[in-house]
Length: 77
Image (tube, rainbow, N blue to C red; front, side, top):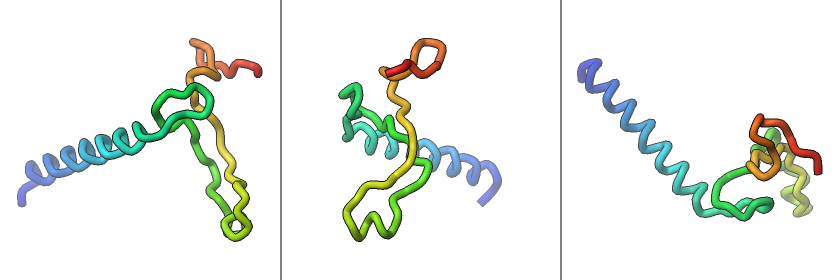
């Protein structure tokens, strides 16, 4: 396989990955704005202790457009 075909395969793989991601995110609604999409960015996943006890101890932040102004600054709640 030559370099041209490999590059074409890589572009195709990236496009398919992005399409699958958009389809996955379109199935969930945001808790804040009730729009489709993944507006939660997790900075630390759930711990083993939390999985055992059933608690949610994830850390992260919301990227919901409802919470930010047109300049990208967080709106006080």
